[in-house]
Length: 344
Image (cartoon, rainbow, N blue to C red; front, side):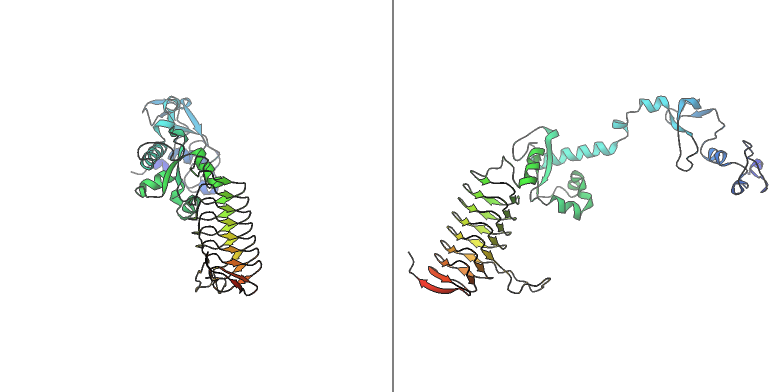
């Protein structure tokens, strides 16, 4: 049924409820802006209102007022009265997401600690000090590739708790981020000096010394009693045997192999690409191999795929373009044999 009072002549100039002057675009409704929104949302002329929570009718004065987004000039009562609003505990009653997040975090910590609830490094057991860690140190790349991984416990639950994660305390996690290892990590008698970048997957034998500015990439395996000098770069997957000596600024490309007791002089450069081009689709890595007991002098350049034989010696400044025979001495550019002796 149509309300006859709602039919107003288009030429109306004043509000039918409050008598205020009307703008042209409000003339058809017969109400000013405040009365129009008040009729659809809340009548501003009412003196009482029903609380939507306790269902009691109370005076308008019992409700807090708020400014709606659709009209900043209005001040309308809130749906709940002051008593109901004060009685509600928003942290426990309304924030279901927070409770779900806490539950997901506890489930993830319990799963990756095998029910012990302890740090895998130092054994810290207090739950407020524990966090989840990417074992391979790729947390930043993981969050960039999948935005849902920003809240890790939820992502783990949705993906059925995949491998590659562990439980650490905040101290151990911070130490791993800064120096790629935690002070509690069991590297026996390993000395690591300042400004060294070591990936979390590196294996280091006892008695090893790593000097300032060295960079050691992922999956490198270093034997016992190895000395790595200032500014050395060791590529991903390189294997270094026991008792090796790498002097300052040695460059080893990925997947190089050094057997035991290899000496590399300062500034030795190894390459693994025969045709270096930007964006080369036919790139094929050919890392060098250094057999047991060989010595390479200062400033030597080793070209791709070269094998330096056991007990061989390469003179300073040489450019090695082909394999070096065992127990031989080579010098020059390109390197030539000047002495050959029998195996000891």
